[in-house]
Each structure stands twice: as C-alpha cells, then as structure tokens.
Length: 167
Image 1 (cartoon, one colour):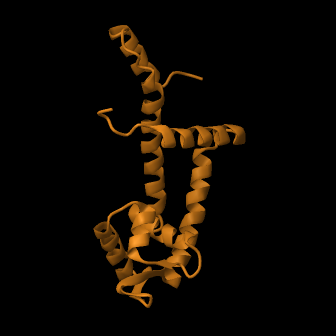
Image 2 (cartoon, helix red, strand yellow):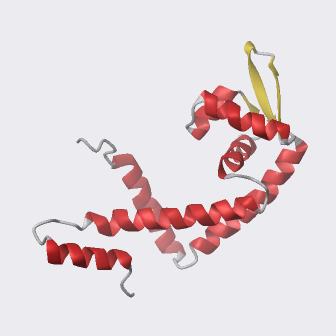
Image 3 (spheres, one colour):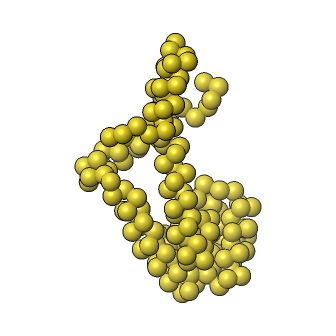
C-alpha cells in the first residue's frame, strides 16, 4: 500500500511538531477525503436522474417507509434530520415536478400527508438501483469481511464520538 496525501501530511507534522500526536489525522483526514469523493460521485449519479441529493433523500425516505409511501412532513423531516422549513422547500420543488403530492391528513386536520406519485416511485426505484450499484463499486476495493469490519467500526465511531469541539 503506497503513501497517500494524508501520509505526507502526517510526515510533515512529525518533522515540524514531533511533540504533537497527529495520529487522529490518519483517520479523520481520510474520512473527510473519502466523504467528499463519495458525495461527489453520488451527486453526479443522482443528477443522471434529474435529482439533487436533497430530492433523492425525500423520495428515498418516502419509498423506504413502505406502502402507502406517504408520511406527514414532520415525520419526513425527523427521518431526514432537517427542519420543517427545509422539508416544505423540498416538497414544493418535488410537487411541481409531479413526483410527490400532498393531501389533507384525515387523522389530523392541521397536517397534510405527503405521498410518492407513481412517477416519483418509478423514478426513485430506478435511481436507487443505480445508487446502490455505485456504492458497491465505490467499496469494490474492500473484501466483504473488510466492509463488515469497517461498518462495525464506523457504527462504533458514530455512537461514541464527541461532537462538541469545546470538550
């Protein structure tokens, strides 16, 4: 395995500041770099279907929710971890394109239900197949065992990482 840019940076810090433990850069630097590369590849793939990453996220959230492929905007936003205003903006764009529809919620007069239209479901189904094929290609340098171990380690990191930089 050859050096990558992170190895160069680690070497520079070791030379310039041997008193610092720069070893977290070996993980964080690489996570940051691979995240940017993956996000760009996924964005380009979603563009092939006329979708932005945000639009793909809405359609995928509705689709993976199962029949009848609808939910209220609050649940949708919670599932995507975004604000209600952001949900509304995304839904407005998707509704104009005929990919989702909104109707009054019979169980709550103050709310609406957002549904995938047949066109939205068909588009999302095609886009998701392509999305997963791309993700598999992005991970093709790893064995199944390595992928499982990496997933396990990343799960551990997401559940234990301190996110407050002041701590």
